[in-house]
Length: 309
Image 1 (cartoon, rainbow, N blue to C red):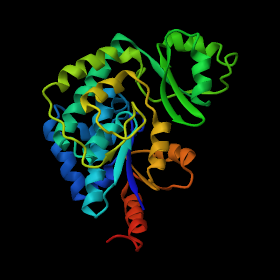
Image 2 (tube, one colour):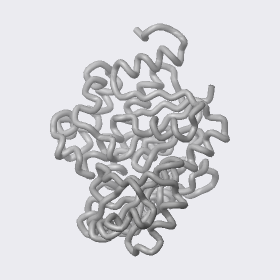
Image 3 (cartoon, rainbow, N blue to C red):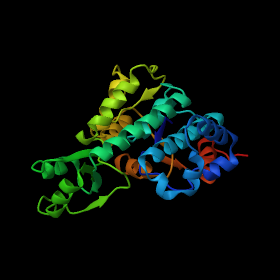
C-alpha cells in the first residue's frame, strides 16, 4: 500500500467545516487555537457560523489550509503518514506542509497573504470560473478564438475548468454549443484563478516569498503547474507560476498512478478530489476525511481493526 494525502482547494469550504473535529480532537483544537492567535481576526466563528463571509477568498483559503494541516497532524498522531502528497490549487500549500517545506505557522501566514493578493487581483480584474464537461484538447480548441477565456484546471478526462472576465465568459457561454461545449456550470470561487488575470497577485506573492525560507521536500511532492513529481524545481517559482498557470490535476494523478500510489486520502471539506481521482484512477482505494466518523472509519480501515478508541 502506497499512501498519498490529497488536499482540498478553494471552493470546497462550507459553513461548519471542522467543527466536529475541533470539538472532539485536541490536536485539531490546538492547531485552530494557534491559528487564531496568529491571524488578525477571529476565524473560527467565520468557519463555523458565517457562510457568506467564509465564501470570500480572504477567509476561505486560511480556513481550508487550517483544516487540512490539522487533519494531517491528526493522521500522524494515529500513526498514518503519507509516502507523498498533492493538492488542488490552494491544497498544494497543505501538501507543502505535509512535505516539510515549511512550518504550520509559516504556511498559514503564506496562505493568508496569498489570499489577500488574490482578492486584490480579483477587485482589479473580476472574473468567474466554469467547469466544462469535456476533455482538455476539446476545450482548448473551443476557446482558441475567444480572447480572454483561459483553461484554468484540467481536472479529469471529461472535465476542464475555464475562466475569464464575466464579459468574456458570457460571450463564450452564449455560443458555447456551437463551439462543441454542451455543459458548463459555475464554480464557487470569487475570481478567474490560474489565468493571466492573476498576474498582479503573482507579482506580489513573488515579493513576499523572497525572504521566506523553504526547505526541500522530505517526501514525494507532486505539483499542479508541471503535473509531475517535484525534482529540482524552485518551489518559490512554482508558487508564483501556479497563480496564473493552469492546474494540471489530471496529469498529476496519472503520474502518481505510474509511481505506484494505490491509496489516496483526501483531507479537507466536501470530498471533491476523491470524486475526481475515482474518474482518473478507478482501481485506487479512496478515503475522504472531514469529520469524526470519517476519520475513525479511515483509521480502522487502514489498520485493519475496529473503530479507533
